[in-house]
Image (cartoon, rainbow, N blue to C red):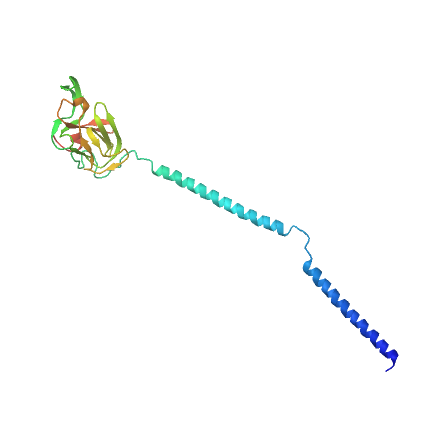
Length: 232
């Protein structure tokens, strides 16, 4: 092989080598820039993140508001349900003049019912006695004449401690002259339940110890013994 041929071959090899090197360098630059290039700050990710966050916050707010509203409604509903009743329901066992009633103390009557004026030795005048006085001893148990709803409990200067019970069918009984009371306003009692113990009637302290029982039917005074189906 001639010297000229060798030189030409060497030039071709160098050129090929240069091309290969340049290709490698170019490929490396492409990979580098492709890997380390930063995307321009756009509005794709940020709005997406903000939108998702807003949706979550709104969902929580609506849920919490709904819970508060529900709680408020439950509280209002509870308040209505716990309101004390004002009347006793009527049934087969609390029909005036027909159903069975218990004596509040015993059968012994100290002073009967009267709408006419009679002389009162205690008060020193003529007056009606729209009640029945049942004899007893101080401390004796006083019971409900029938099932009922306690309308009131109070102390009266003339009648002493008083318990007022609605016994249904518009029959209301007033138990007067109690020493102690074992029921509260708004509570229910069953027939024969103790409502207190016997004490004194301040306006009738000169008479023997007794329970002063008044009854009204639809607001009008009636004889307790008659309405209970009892006799003196």
